[in-house]
Amino acid sequence: MTPRQLLGQARVHTFEYVPYLASYIYSLREHETPGIGTAAVDDAGNLYWCPEYITSIGKETAAYVIAHEALHLIFDHHRRAVEMLGEDMSESERYICNIAADLVIEQTLHMMRHLRPDGAVHLGAKVPKLGIKLDFPENKSMQEYYRLICEKLKGNQGNPPEENEDGDGASDSGDGQADDGDKQQDSGSGQDSGAGDSGGEAGNDGSDPQEDGEADAPSGGAGAPPSGQGEAPPPPCSPGSGGSCADGQRRPYEVESDGSWEAYGEDMAAAKAEEAIAEIESSHPGTVPDNLKEVLKQKLRPQPDPFDQLRSAVCTSVASPVGGREFSHRRISRKQPPGDDQPLLHGRICTQPHAVVIVDTSGSMLGRETKAKALSVIGQGLRKLGRVKVYCADTHIRSNKLVGTTERFEWVGGGGTDMAKAIEEVDRRDKPDSIILVTDAETYWTAYKPRARIVVAYTGDPSSRWCSSIPKRYRTVVLERGGAA
Image (tube, rainbow, N blue to C red; front, side, top):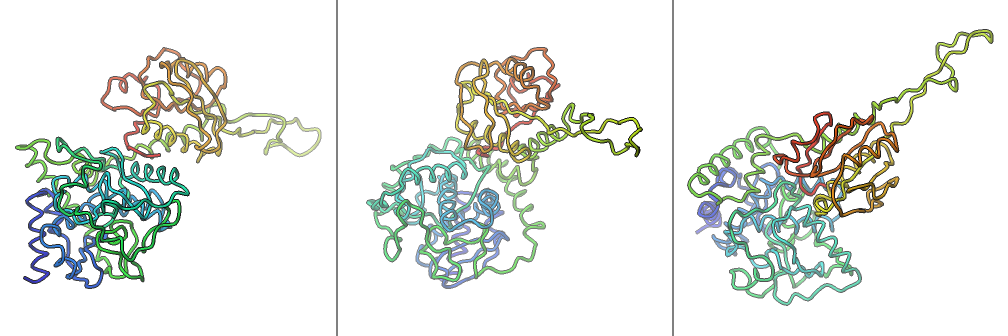
């Protein structure tokens, strides 16, 4: 059997596990690329594959690799990585992104875990190059895993990389990149994360294919293997071994896009995938991971980014403040006639908009993701104003500080909730032009009508009664995008 025939069988074999991805997997255009030592996908729907590598791993493991690469394309990891870290991200950042996104994909492919290749990334695996173990919670987004890895690296500063005792330290096939909407909800899959993943499964025999011939990371875990551009290819299934679909960085072997994937190919694949999911869910509900259904929905029927709406609301609110123009003799009017004997006309002074942020710091707002949303709101205000006054309030005002960076914000509170009282107190005490209130709205409202414009950045469930109870006279922006810090 030739390598190409083996690859074809592997693509067909994916149908046994993820039939709803067939439209994506079968639409990938093959490019035999000897010497790259792996299989990879670019952001234009091209599948690059090394014949020696496909032959070495066999049909079943190749099926896992192909499904893994297709998910990089479906989850738009190339775009999300750039959105999160910019186009000039460092090799260390790319490496951590690879691991974070591979954690997301590994959980999405929970039904194929027994097929994953040696050294694949999973929850509970060790990463010797970073000196850490991926002992993180399940069902998190790529951004959240990226943050968790960075936090662990900071706590590991100065410590040598861990020894790889059980060979579970390398990344999965095809690396991985940023992922906003792809939280893992495996719908009754019964995932077994943690160290338990490493035992008793195919492809985890205690050996580490990456251990030989690779340099250790610098102390503190900031190192990364080569990206594959102009250098020897990384070992198969290691971070950096995939294509530009994973991190937005083109590889030397990739061909120029003809534009067909962007123009109509992806839309057709997504529509067929959604139809296949609906058919499967009609007879076997809960079979398809929720994150996959959500990302296809966003591709076909994109919703306005709530943070863009918030940015618009904040900028509009502070750019056209109540009482923003003041007439005074301190400035000469442009219409002042010449001559000392002429009456002195009032000049017009445009005052600096006065906007403040109130953060609901009650007990119901103490979740990590909720705090991240609050920091995002503060960040929007800082982009417009440079500095912004931030109040922390639960049943009453707990603190107020002028904040110039989100790192200076301190969360003070943890009690009950009375946002109506907080708005009234801030409106009367500070007399702002605009108030941006960050809250889950689990409070009661009064008939008090503040002088300031009110923008409510709502962090809770938009279908909740708390959302519908927010006064209509306030502009409400629902913050649904998880992990947007």
